[in-house]
Image 1: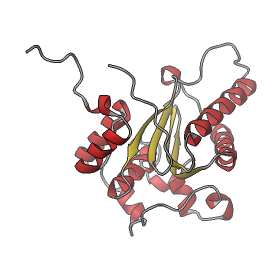
Image 2 (image 1 turned 120 degrees about the vertical axis):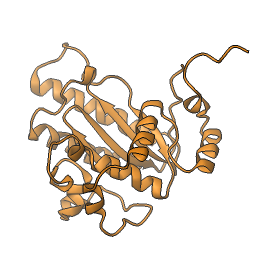
Image 3 (image 1 turned 45 degrees about the vertical axis):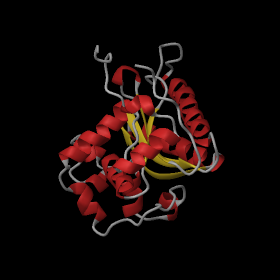
Length: 223
């Protein structure tokens, strides 16, 4: 199956993910997370992208963002990962010992409605889902913690959401996952297929030329 087309169009919302090579740890200590957040903050200042939600995990990270200029998301992610790799190798003296990331980032477009909220919940619930904290807002390295603990530093690089945050959002994140929703999002993570309502997914498939992400895997049945 061919790789999904890399998409990066202004006005679209994307979930973006990248993992450590062979799922290796890329954040070994708190200072590593903090250093990456500083890189991310710098990157948002350099490139025309709105960052809505994010979470850093020991061996991967998630962003929900939208480019304001064509191609800016790719530029941002290239700069962030390259800068992170250079600083990581310099700090741990691992230059020449292999790649940090598994390869290019994965992404999929998200409809700007309750599906956006579902993806943000998926992202901001990651540490809780993995058993790293007892409450989602206690994980320091993500957007939920920054919004709950509102300070000028915490808010300065996160953009206002394109839809209103529901009341009781933190309680919603700390609730149980809806398995059908979780399964659909994970399918989009793996295959890069659009995540939204039926009509929107059909239109996004045509608009963004993502037909291959929605086809059944394997060879076509013989007629």
